[in-house]
Length: 340
Image (tube, rainbow, N blue to C red; front, side, top):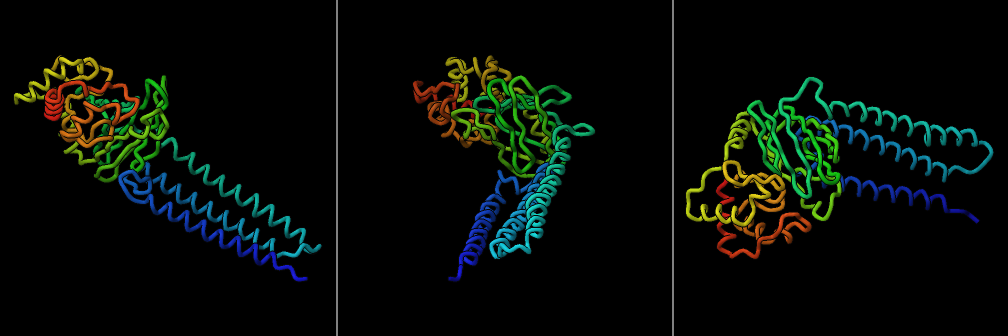
C-alpha cells in the first residue's frame, strides 16, 4: 500500500512557513512609521540598533529556512542504510554549527556597539538628568549658567550628543525614545547613562518601557528636536522665572493655587510656591502636553486634570480638587495656562 504522508507533511511545512512569513512581515511593516517607531529612525543610536535588528532578522530567517529545508529533505529521504553519514553531517552542520556561528556573530556585533550607546568617548554637548517617578518625569538640564528644571518633556538640538543621567526614587522605570535610541533602566539608588544624538528635527514620543505600577501606560513624554538656535532660545526662556499674572482671572487663579496648598508640592519660580514633591510648573503653559503625555495642553484639559486627577491617571499621588468651586478650578487653569 503506497504511503503518501511525506508529501502531505512537506506541503504542511511549506504552507505553515508561508503563513508565518506573512504574519512576521505584517507585524514589522506596521511598526515602520510614527513618532514612537524604533524603525523610523531619527538618531545615530537608533540607526545602529535598527541595522543590528535587520541583520538579526536576516540571520534568523536564514536559520529558519535551513531548518525547514532539512525537515522537508528528511521527510522525503528514505531511511535506508546508504544515508546515515549524510544525515549526520546535515544535522551537525545545519542544525548546530551554522546556527551557533550566525548567532555568535550577531551577539558579538550587539555587544560591540553597547559602550558607544552608554558613555560618549569624547564627551557630550549636553547633559540632562531625568528621574522617573510614579508616574511622571523630573527633568533637569545642566548648563554653564546653572541647572534648569522642568518636567514631562525633552527638547534636544539636532546633531548634538546628549548624555542622559537616569535614576529613580521609587521603583524601576525604563527610559526609551524609540526613534532616537535604545532603552535604559532607571534603578533606585543608581545612576545609569544613555547617549542620544538626534539626526533630524521633528516631534517624537518617549515612554516608560518597564512596568512600574497602575499608571505605567500613562507615563509618556513628548520629545521635540529643533535647530541649535531654537533650542538655545527655548532653554533661555525656561531659565526665566514665572511671568507675573496681569489679568484679574489669572491673579485670582494664582491666589487659589497658593491658598489650596498646590505650592506645597509644586514649584513656580518667582512665587511662594516652592514644593519639590511634584513637577515644576514654572512654564507649564508652554509645554507640549499635560500629565506626562496624557492630555493636550488646553484649558479644558487643565480643568479636567485639576478636578479629576485620579480618574485621568489611576493611582497618581496628586489629589483631585473636584471639591473646589467651579470658578476656582477655572481660575487656576487660566493661571497655569498663563505660565508661558
